Image (cartoon, rainbow, N blue to C red; front, top):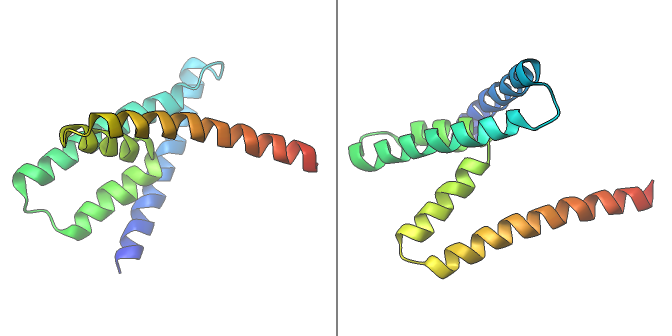
Length: 124
């Protein structure tokens, strides 16, 4: 049941992301990734709002939490989950680990994209 909840939310989030990408491309063109920037910022704001609400109200079921955060926001942007992880590490006082996580995530992820591109170029 929990997987179905995440699945449904993820589909909605992905559809929302596509809508934002199409909308920003029509408004601003495609010379800059405005769609991705928009979903990352909006997704992070909504993640902060939701997790703050969950933390202070505490009356939201696990089903709703999964549907909204892992599902909808996970489909909309994974950057919100990354940003929440960064905030959690930092708020626990693990500043060095926060820096390592941010740098490793960004640098290694970008390196992985370039590695995948290079591998496919060599194979095709």
